[in-house]
Length: 306
Image (cartoon, rainbow, N blue to C red; front, side, top):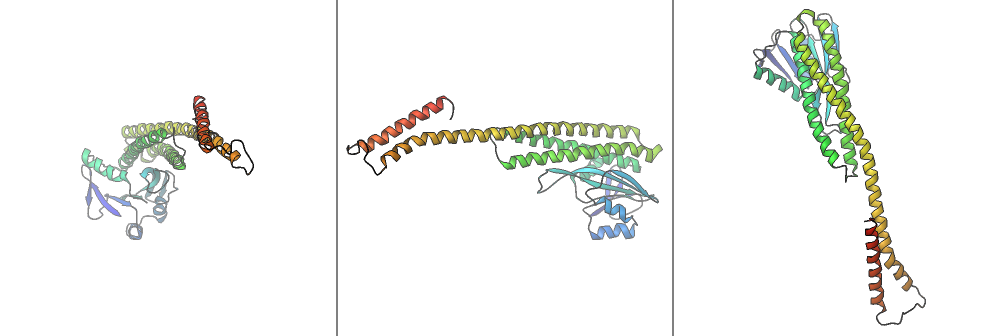
């Protein structure tokens, strides 16, 4: 779906394209791609690369067209990893400012709302790119806070859990942290390259703010990744200990049940046995089996087998 925005103390939606307005395309369909390629003349390679999930942050040129790829975070649905990163292409020439992303994300709508709330006037292409990168750093940090809460919940379940679902959940979080870490580092490198591309119109102060936010997100992702790695190692040990504890209790229960089973086996033989003709021998055997089982249970409890 494509929408058009003009910068008037914040991005305001307009009905149709005009020179120097922002064209935002999220989850493009065939008609959107046809409009961009045929009516606006956007190079096909740039459009394809913008929707390729494996594209890495980079800068490219083709004639008057400039192409910038960023990696931004987004919330996944129905996947092991709660979050992932996807490319967003920023395609510009003398009159066109276009962003295209394969999925609709929370970041873009928040970016638009933020510019309106703060009444931010975006007057240049470099300013737009830097503010979009700043927004991506903010959302990396926001999602990392949520991931930290997931980690705390999973850690609390370690003491008693031996479910595979818990392991898959933590592996999904670790995968997300790896994606975040690599994407943030690639975006950091891109900031330095932007300065050589835009030269005089480049806002050094805003660029420094972007770098600080990206470094903070990068450091946070690394810390969480280290914590998750140590937690997963502990998780494996906890599962092993839990299994051993369960097997120990089952062995103790088998020992307790073995006493009455053994006595019943002796008196169930088809041969003459002692006291078989006594009138209350059955009750004596039952009571004796219970007494011995209880005594054995108390002994095993004393040595902490239960």
